[in-house]
Image (tube, rainbow, N blue to C red; front, side, top):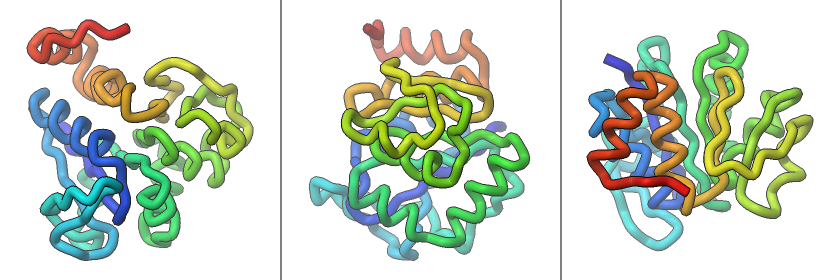
Length: 184
């Protein structure tokens, strides 16, 4: 079974985080919702509190197939400020293991040099943070082991790209059909 962890910091964009959780669980993946603050409930940018599965210190990173970073300005800043998470992002990149980020969160990958020579997308106005990347305007962009998405309106495409990479296009198509998603 494929395992991913979605990391939550106060002020995350609710739809970006929870759509990934929902679609990937529908696809049969084990998805861990992880609080970087250690709080059992983390509030998003619109005040919606979500109960976490675990805190950062409980994550078995060796067992994960992917790290997912949702956006939201405040949430992105909170994720980037967490030294332990950034060390894991760097380790995943160096090992060629999957990283996924959407909205403002691809800026984290840009700041860490992970996007150099890659295609990547982000929330409009954040392109300057995609250091060294060719900016993509696609809803979701896959370049090697890095998946990026532009924003909240692109979360289904982004989530299905994750499913496609980890479980294959056929499974992504099945999930898209089951949720009546027809893309753009």
